[in-house]
Image (cartoon, rainbow over all chains, first blue to last red; front, side, top):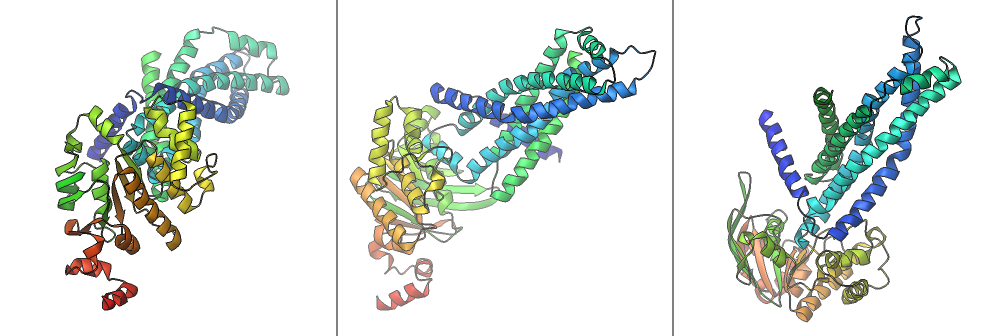
Length: 247
Length: 250
């Protein structure tokens, strides 16, 4: 088991070395990179915004219900909601959402290219398939995911505000007061750093599982599931590690 | 010319190829034949560098492929074109983009030059008005021809075909065989075809290497394959009732 794990990790490192080699032609690389930016960013925007709106709404409502006490100031609801949303929910939950959305797409795309010998065709042509196919995806996700995280934070906070305004559980003034209370830019830096690391893990692990498929459609399905499970697990472990280091 | 000297290939403990020695000649259609699972595809993948043999050498006009430095290997790869069993066209690109892809990657040609080259390659394989179509919009035979056109794009010296007739009807198979012969003779390529299609073996095989259980069991040409005394070869060639009847007439 441990030997298998180490062997897979070794294969992953070798794969990364292939991915981070110089592209055969920069103009082709930029073309693919722009395509990935568009596909990943625009393609995931709607789901991220919907989930964030709902998440912000629920977290605000839950917080308001839990701290109904005369001893705790009303602005605490906004403060707790903002802190949870910025520091944990948006970077981690949205990254896990993107693992399911983008990660499975990456594994399926690269895996089907492997199964239909398109990757072999690239190799025979003299193109480094790992660099040509994966590097644009990795660099695009490292840019796209933090942008999506910022949108997610904005929508989640807006969701919270909307809930407060519609339910009247606290006044919107108190909520806004809590949102801005003791705001630190470092919290956003921390959130975006986590998102970048998670984006790297998601794109490389998903690509790795797609790239090493041997077999057909059945293996493609298994690889897609494995990619999601492993990425999610690594993201959760790294979340603890990064939090320990940065906070 | 491609020389294969004592090539052995293992997958784990299992030996797939046993000291294969053969040659593929320039300007000729060279066939690798054998039953499914005999090691034909593994041999072809060793030739094009998708597998590295554990023992032996593959020499391209005297250059030992697997021991070349990366930059020289890359140059040699640009002299190769390969048509895969399932065509392996890039589904996200149009047929013209598929054909111009190697030109985009390795040349500085202008858009109009690349367009002209794509049209020339499509003309060579008798495909017209498919430039803007995607692979999914083509039939199996058309995909094969488009894949041949892509393989021709960089004017290769060495052409490889992995089971070019699989999944095609007899008439389209004949067309593909004619195309392979025409391209080989017109462009003087060293063509290696991996097949177990009997019609291809008889009609286009100028040199034939018969692989049996990972060993080179017989080497000859289409002129003498039907009259060979080799038992394993005869078991392969005359396996079907139709060919058994043919044998009685010989």
